[in-house]
Amino acid sequence: GAGVSQTPSNKVTEKGKYVELRCDPISGHTALYWYRQSLGQGPEFLIYFQGTGAADDSGLPNDRFFAVRPEGSVSTLKIQRTERGDSAVYLCASSSQTRAFNEQFFGPGTRLTVL
Amino acid sequence: GENVEQHPSTLSVQEGDSAVIKCTYSDSASNYFPWYKQELGKGPQLIIDIRSNVGEKKDQRIAVTLNKTAKHFSLHITETQPEDSAVYFCAATYDQAGTALIFGKGTTLSVSS
Image (cartoon, rainbow over all chains, first blue to last red; front, side, top):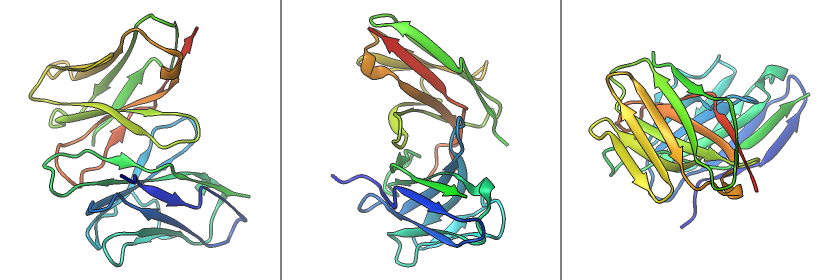
């Protein structure tokens, strides 16, 4: 079956601009996570959705970052007033609510470059 | 919070040799330890995981061991092949939905033929 998909695969923007990154989780997966991966590092947690609600947003670095999941499926990560330090690969993962454990399946990521 | 250390950062082996990557974690309550393989330009792929109720798990050429007392876990790849070349990440977390994975910094494995 289809895995997690993310669009766009690459996004280049200028400092100060607004960007939206989209994640389409595995069909039927109610849990959705966003992570950020800087060059040479492991992914770092940003936010977790269970259904439509953000159950844990403790990883969001500041209030320029926001994410939504209005219908409990597709999620959009929104970054306002982008800064050069926001440049990274943004990864989305999903997992199944029907399983008792925490297997997370990742998408290919969106590489964001802020000039 | 949880902290995961991973060693080595780079590992070069000859095809057919074994490779071992080691991780340590700090939170004794962590009970789920997945390993991911990440190829260039792709997202992390779950390759094997272990829970704290077992000490070892195998899947063909890969195996993972867990020492809860020492808070160590390791990935073992036998009979390495060039297609095993990638960055490998370990992670630690609680085995419940909604808990963030805490990753190590990764190991770049190079298998030369």
